[in-house]
Image (cartoon, rainbow, N blue to C red; front, top):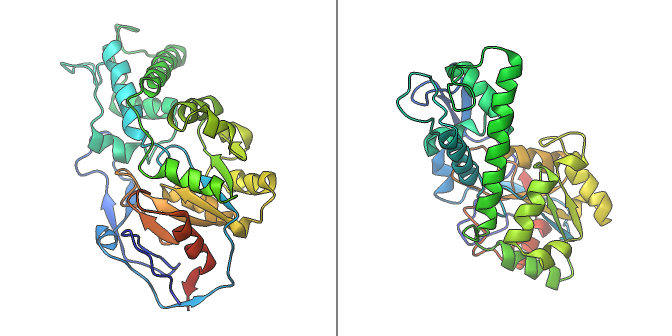
Amino acid sequence: MAVSCNHSAILFSPSTAGSSSVSSSSSLIGLPRFQTLRFKSRSLYSKSRVSPVSALPSRSLEALIFDCDGVILESENLHRQAYNDAFSHFDVRCPPSSSESLNWSLEFYDKFQNLVGGGKPKMRWYFKENGWPTSTIFESPPENDDDRAKLIDTLQDWKTERYKEIIKSGSVEPRPGVIRLMDEAKAAGKKLAVCSAATKSSVILCLENLIDIERFQGLDCFLAGDDVKEKKPDPSIYITAAEKLGVSVKDCLVIEDSVIGLQAATKAGMSCVITYTSSTSDQDFNDAIAVYPDLSNVKLKDLETLLQTIVTAA
């Protein structure tokens, strides 16, 4: 039987759901002109959706694993702010004929950051598509590979330091419910882990400033992108976490915010719940066992109930 769940969660079985294709070429200048994006209908987020189900063998929640960016904090707009601050600082004009510094809008970045991963690849792709810019680094658009690499390296280094300043400023808070849920898990004797595809230094910075040093040091496992050969959606990071925790993958529950993280968790054999952000809310989360707008009303007992009665298509 399907598990009932409050808090406006959407329960999914791995059955096929309707989705629509949206061309990215319509209004977002700079995105791939012929890229087709797969978006889940927003109507699925307005009410619960449960397919005919039959119960699988019960599972026990032994370990709770959090992603970092998007789950513990909504970081994408902070990254966007840091990029725009870098563009302004170096007066980056793209295209060179622009009357003002480059500024990535929220609408643009929400889509762009899900298409091109990594800071340097983002800028390289954007400049390649829209024209290499003028700046205080190079008065004329750089024409050779060395100068282009220097431009991107300089922008990325400044952007990274600016992002650190934003995180350390005290103005950034964890997403609703995260701290409480972590504390509930530790108090109940559950293993607690954070697994992020970001660099170790970046994740440490976020965790020390957002969940505090004591909670960070109390984690039973902490893995970053540096710790595994393959990044998400490869399942390596979650398989490694289960091994380090000494817990079966079937008794781990992952909290993710994106379909890439969801794929990594399910490929590892773990169940996954989603707490989506503005930039991931349209993604296809059919393989998640529940979807939440945030964790503000989600209790540990709710997650234990979900894991004990996992549902699948009959």
